[in-house]
Structure formats: structure tokens, C-alpha cells
Image 1 (cartoon, rainbow, N blue to C red):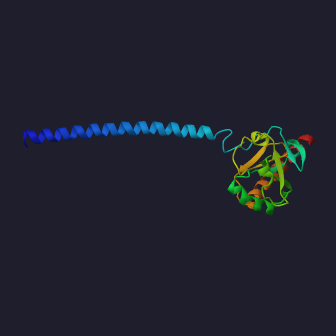
Image 2: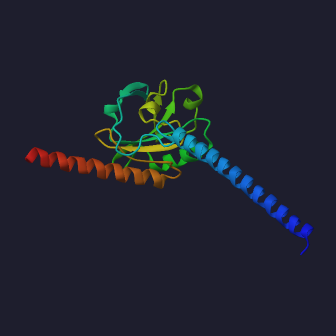
Image 3: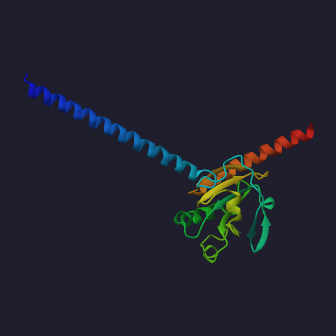
Length: 196
């Protein structure tokens, strides 16, 4: 091979190595940016994000309006609370499903929770659905949630048993069964303690 051909191959290899080095460096930088974005997204979803209070969380006291009267949280539990909003399309579909469940399931009361607004009071719900109207988002803050629809099963000790994004009456019935089982287990533990 002649000198110009060798020089050409060497130049081609040098350009290829430089290009590969630049591309790998760029990929590392993009990966760092993506990792940071993923961490920020995870941080934004924690606590008061979509998830709400996780199972095992004890809910602090709150007040809400029920049938025109103010009730406190200690009067409501055990219960299933389904957070809804008047401008939520999935909530409109869920309204009919809550009508299939009614006021109680598995002997556990079921409540739809709305902000106390005129639009929420006009939301079309079946007549057998009980509604808690929250003032200044007090119930949402107690449950650390901003998302709708979202449902929580709470036992008699005001502890979250389970949470879910409900879509059907079946989801609400499953929460009620878990709530009833947790409440029964709490009762069994307290009777054993009393016997000792």
C-alpha cells in the first residue's frame, strides 16, 4: 500500500474514534439529564402527589358537611371515602357505579367526597350515594391527595387499610371487604388484650 492510502486510513480511524468519543459523551450527558428528570418526577409524586396517604397511615382529624350537618372524622370510620370532582370525566362514570354500591357495602359506609362548591352540589349522583362536602380541602389534606377519583378504605382506628383508583363497583366492594377484615382483626386484638 502506498503512503497516501495509509494516511487516509489513519485519518478515517482518527475521525471515527473522535466521533465515537463525542457520541458517548453526549449519551452520558443525556443519561444524567434523564436520571435527574426521573428523580424530580418521583419526588413530585411523593407525599401529597397522586398516591395519597399509603396503607398504615393514621388519618388526622377533620370536619366535613354531611346532609347539611357538620360531622367529624371520628364519627365516620370505618368507611370507604371516594374522592371525586365535578370536572373529572372518570368521576362521572364512577357515579353510576357508586349507585350500584349504595350507602353501605360489607357493612362499611361509603361516602363520595367533593369540594363544597356549587358545581359539586349539582354533580349528578344517584340518590343512594352519601356525599361529604369538604371545606378548604380539609379531607383531601388529611388524606394527602389531590387526585380524583381515588378511594381509601379506613378502619375504625382511622388507619388507611388500602387505597385504589376506583373504576367500578367491584373496586369499592373489594375495599370494603379489606376494611371489614381489618376492623374485625382490630376487634379481635382488643378483645385478647382485654382478656389478658
